[in-house]
Length: 142
Image 1 (cartoon, rainbow, N blue to C red):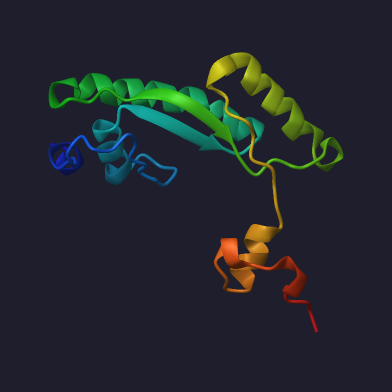
Image 2: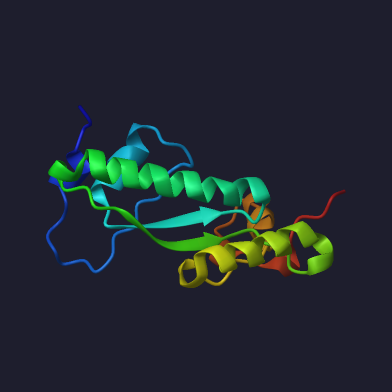
């Protein structure tokens, strides 16, 4: 039987939103998070393989919600966030085309895309918190 601690130990209803960041697999932690959730925001990269996985994800969410309905499971896809997108079409037309297809298929569920930025890996390499990272002082190869 699935461990339902997340659903059973929810904080009082003083929060408008609680985010649970999960890995991209369907292990016990993710199933627990889905049982405890009302809405799911799927974060995917703009590739054909990743976008095809959205339909499998939808089916799995529905299966988990049906299986654990007696425990209060009611998760449903609420939004799709396409992340790590190239900044221009010449960096990858296939990514641009897959984004368009996602928007056609999921319409209003697709949130504005998150564009690729060198700041994140640079801040990580500099071992700095992103909001404090200064690109003008970045590490340059010797």
